[in-house]
Length: 335
Image (tube, rainbow, N blue to C red):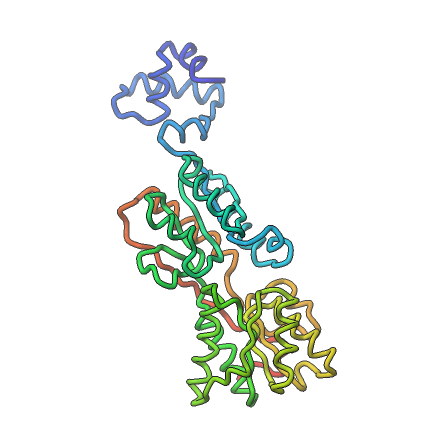
């Protein structure tokens, strides 16, 4: 059933039917009732895409993950985030266009696509410091939201987890348990999440009057292999606890410790970050910082759609709380 058929059954023009469906106030009450009776009788549902095009909208959001395809299969964070984005879009009758971009030439292609009229707005996740994609969005007029705060652009809209606070709480917990040499396996320092979690580690040490020892800091890459390599690097420094900036890296660290003949948590306590499903199945179960990954996705979509609908509204800079989840890998419950 289309508008022409509705018009014929109603005895009015196609344009009148269109005005009724789009709630045009200039249509008389009698005409509106006549058309709506037909609409209800034939169970007509307006085509959302067609209505969107008529209003200058595509009802599509772009989700950009500036990493390679492998990240989707090796890091469970991204499927959970995508699930949150997709769920929120479905609830608002939007679709999602997913872009993965690692090399610069892929980013240039995406910048061209972003301004081709295919999307109403863009979400960028896991951005790098001074990311060219974010700069291109900042220079344009396409609404966008970041998953993760921008390190320098104070005007950018974002939704983030409290990476600094979460890391600080994790390291403070280890220190309260009496661990004296707390090391950290950081995330990449060209990513804001990696930098913020290192800042939280250092803040916890300062809170206890301790200096940060560069020898107890090893940079990882948010992969299990990266956590394994970083832990091997730290072994010579004999830490008695390790805060890993992701659960996946924590699992790699546990493997390296076992191969070195060390026990978790008796010899070395381990705390991760994310609270991924794998953390409960680890041996021992992993103490970790729970970040609301699914909610990051839903909140970012809701905020972006509000920006699209109300472009002159207040900036959106939202930080969601984290939670320390204590399991066996740190050696003790909360004190």
